[in-house]
Length: 181
Image 1 (cartoon, helix red, strand yellow):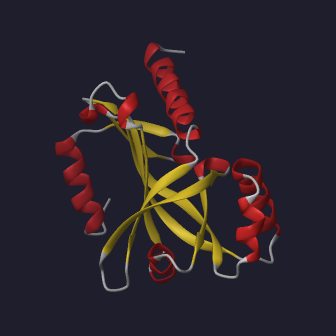
Image 2 (cartoon, rainbow, N blue to C red):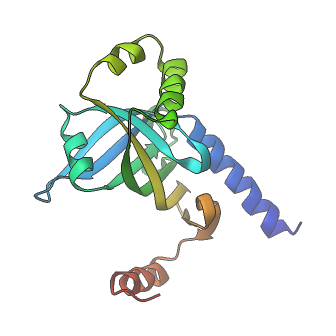
């Protein structure tokens, strides 16, 4: 394995280890009138980096996800653990969101994982009719380890890491927004 390949493999391993260290995520949603909302939600990490959140219909983010099936997810190093607030390690994802119906095997399996992770509160929440399970599937993302250490995530399961280059990325993003490649 070349040095570049082994460095990327170590970086990918560090990224996955970082991602598995979270029990909640920061969630960005948009209302049906275009108003952005930020919130947090307990989560369970699924296969290939899919996030599951179990949230109440009383929360605005639930209505937002129902009306706009897109969400932003942020996993960020606690400020106390960072050497500097400007260099906090973080993973940011743009996700598609969908409800996992209560009458499915997926729902039951994921709720058991929530119960294993969060304990006795989960069966109580499950008995409440307003709680819904959402699957947040990452479509694209970025991984930042610090100053000058930012990677665009792509490929199956967002496992491929490409160093970010602001000038190149602005051009690429503009082309994608126009529908080009």
